[in-house]
Length: 338
Image (cartoon, rainbow, N blue to C red):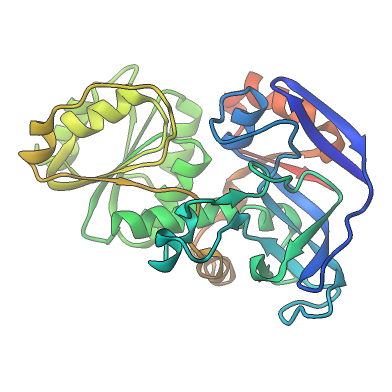
């Protein structure tokens, strides 16, 4: 079988490998589609702090079951499957308290272990989630990024009463926008790319802010009457934006949810947190959110088609990554097809 390997930063090769053997608790999945995520791009450029090399990347993947282990109870040959890429130990403090996504030894397929950019993958039965067979593969590949939207909504305790700011109108920011509007919130979104802000407006954003041309504090005052945003999602990974989100934009009793994983240090003042009793909340991966998202897809509550902008054959992954870098104005989600 063919597999796409990031050998070292900036170097992608397509190699031949043996089709994996499965254990009694695994299925063999024929991969049909896999998305390119910002973290995959980070691995490609050597900027993902969690990755090791060489690595078959890809954690947003779906496929068809072609072989089933003897002890597998939740899948059969021919099933269409979305794979939850999060692997946890089950017994550390985080796992015992129901937060396996931040397990002490968490592994993510495509980051710590080989992922979905290969024709066949052996997958444990507890990572399998059934998909409707009429869902197109390239759309099905967005279940994992939408699970991030579900996770951040949970972490931020998002409700229809919230006035929300989303920093970053990339695919995750736009997914959060869809989830927030589904829940009835009033939402502003900030970015520096006009085409993405136009897409956000089409998706129902109540205000779009290009921070190159409009002061975010001025926009906050207009949008909230000077109160500040009740809930802020920082999805740019830019520490200067995060600093602004803590110091200048939240309301009293506000929540700031941090999605980025920059390793850059930056100063914060205790008084900015204490005086407003702010909550600064981390969020990582997803915590068993796939079933919720698949129901959203079935019920038409979100619009995953709007996120997929480009497709490439998986054997042209190098061209896909290059296109992603060179044409950010044209890209939300690239999906590799198999």
